[in-house]
Amino acid sequence: LYVAVAAVLVVTFITLIVGKTQIKESSKAATVETKPRAEEEAKKKEAESPAIPSGRVQESSSYQGGPSSDLYLPPMLDMHYADTFGESNVHGRNVPVFWDVPRAGGTAIKFILGKCHGYILASEDGKGHETNSLEVFYSASGGFANVDTYSFAGIEHAKSVGLSSSTEVDVIFSSHVHEIAEMLTNRHQGRLFTIIRNPVERAVSFYYHEQAANMDYAGMSVVDFFTKPKTKHLVEDNWMTRYLTNKKEGRLNIEDVNLAMEILRRKFLIGLAENVPESLIRFKKHMGWKDTRRRGETNTVTCEQRFTVPNSHKNPTIEKGSQAWNVITELNRYDMKVYDYAVNLFNEQAESV
Image (cartoon, rainbow, N blue to C red; front, side, top):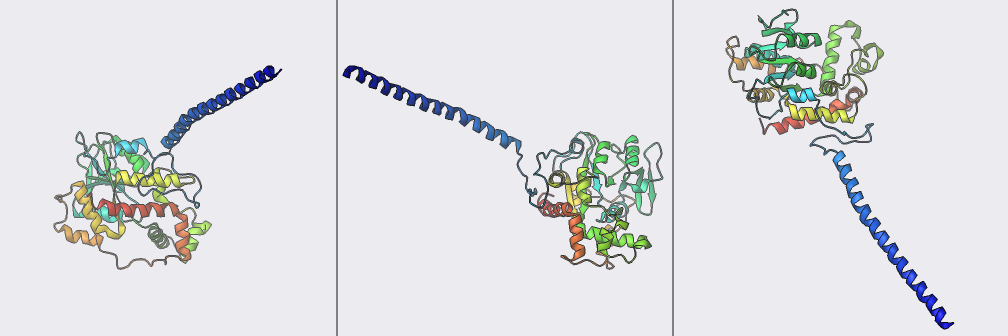
């Protein structure tokens, strides 16, 4: 009897030992199996989350939607515009393309390059002069190609007459960088530069311009102009963000801001409306503009000063933090971030130009 009981106890003890060993081995195997799987998931998640470039806006509670999941530039824009500080196109021609932001100083740059220096420009000045071939005509403002690069139909016409490959035209002016990109080619790339102005100052300038042009708006306050139904059809929000990303309509989000800033960083030489003289120096140096054409002004310095010296008859400004200021900044909250980033780029680019 004692022998039988002892045998049962031994068998039970062995069973317990084996069971614990199997559990331990099973747990170990599960841990070993789970670890690489967890590492694999972490790597996958990291690969799907792109690094945030310098200056990129992160998601905050004031924005709806998540951070950008893709910072690839639109293919046509990426292929047909040279990187700002990339190598020149040795197999073809880089065409300087000025992105004209409304009420930011583009008209002054046009006069300086066209009238003071005698360069041949493609802009809206060619409207009404179109023919079946590319030609140059002259006016009091300078020499112009017979194309209109400010309208979609005009850009199509410019493409049909071979504007991008022409050696007669020195600079293309337009507000439509994406449509101009479709006119360009890998062999004839564009090289972008621009003048950018504080969105609040642009908006106020637009307000006074419309008041002077239309008596229906006379007497309207800044706040009323940007909030009342009467002028709703005139007011645009976040113009720079929309035209850089080619998202002219619909709701914008933080991903659009990030894309707009990345396009500026990769493709644009930045100039600022508050420092046109320095901007002009950089433009000339970057584009290699050293000479003045035959039809340019004899004294280019004096001519330039006519368009770079601050206007003594400037419109009244609005106070930062006022109701008008807050209305405009809220309406253009994405452009305010793009503008701040452009100012940083202007400072950074000083070392590279």
